[in-house]
Amino acid sequence: MVKLAPSILSANFAALLDDVLKAEEAGAEYLHIDVMDGHFVPNITIGPLVVEALRPRSGMLFDVHLMIEKPELYVEQFIKAGADLVTVHVETTPHLHRVLAMIKEKGALAGVALNPSTPHGAVEYVLHLVDLVLVMTVNPGFGGQSFIPEVLPKIKAIKNMLSEKGLNAEIQVDGGVNRDTAAAVVQAGATVLVAGSAIFGKGDIIAAVREIREAASSNSY
View 1 (cartoon, rainbow, N blue to C red):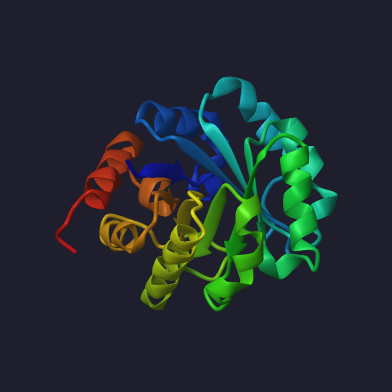
View 2 (view 1 turned 90 degrees about the vertical axis):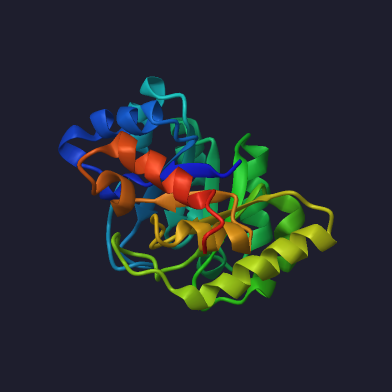
């Protein structure tokens, strides 16, 4: 079954806990937590304190997406704060293997992320270390962007690469995922869908989660 990961980047931060609990009530399996540093991406968001504050209040898998330079300096802080999964970008560190191994050693699940223009082969030699591969279908930094359909073949390529190696990591897609694009990414091979504005930007969070889940299972694309 496809899993949903509502992104709090688009949540109402004045009522963040309420939004998170509504997403959980709707059956979302992951809580996607976008961490931005204003260097790797042109935006600044949150740090470990927000993760720590939310952790006792939710049973969802806390999926921390580090869109930051030198992620190795912050991995341990986020895991101590309550991250279950930490994803780092190929583009942010020259020592990707070492950072992913560090995440595993600290007791969390490890994810590796690719920007839209980064080729799928960039993760080939670390696939054995990861529990999740995140394919960006927008250029990271802001919520509410339009889906880049040219990335769909990369999702398929990663699925094939995992299959050839006998690995079963999740394939997560982040960027422009909504009721109109969900079926396409699932058919390409995605197993975890990140959605921000398509969930938290709607008036009814519970209905929005249900709508995307139904679209993801559609064969109409």
